Length: 258
Picture (cartoon, one colour):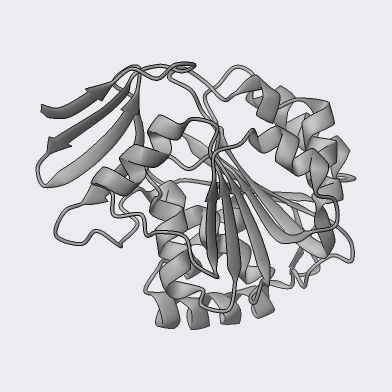
């Protein structure tokens, strides 16, 4: 593994960029991978959990406004900017050094009418913008664990309030974290128990989808058809995501219970 750059952030761990076997990685103060980009296919989603989080499209297929808390290398931001051409995306990253790395090493595009990358506190942004988003994605980790300000009961209640009616939030959690049950319980309480879990296939990430009423269509037949259409459109494994959610979530009368 070769390190291309080391930058000391003023308020966070060191931002490090490395490359191995044709893949560029972003690290924050340790070996844990925060973001990855295959150099020969830089706009693809290299990490499976980043593809899984896009399963929000099964429930809100045409979002007008999306907020992303935690930029990393910008993989999700640049993918959605390229493929979700009718959506506006606001990405929040508290550390300017991370934004600079995303633009300098991971091809994150400059802001335009559909993309706004803001160096701000994501939790504060959520609290300040109720009823403003159709989709909210939360992926905020430091070198060791999820950022506590992005995992408190108050934060999860603010996430619920930030969504427009019928909106969905997706939280990237680490299934092996001893605090996972606590975080999941906090999300479920904030969203009135209207949640679904989607584990990543190869790593310990678990995406928790949480919904603001009115609830989405959750009949398996409908979601399987939607997954096939999204797979044809985007080339991602949406049918596998539906199958995995079926293994992890209660089903009644051929529909997910949310």
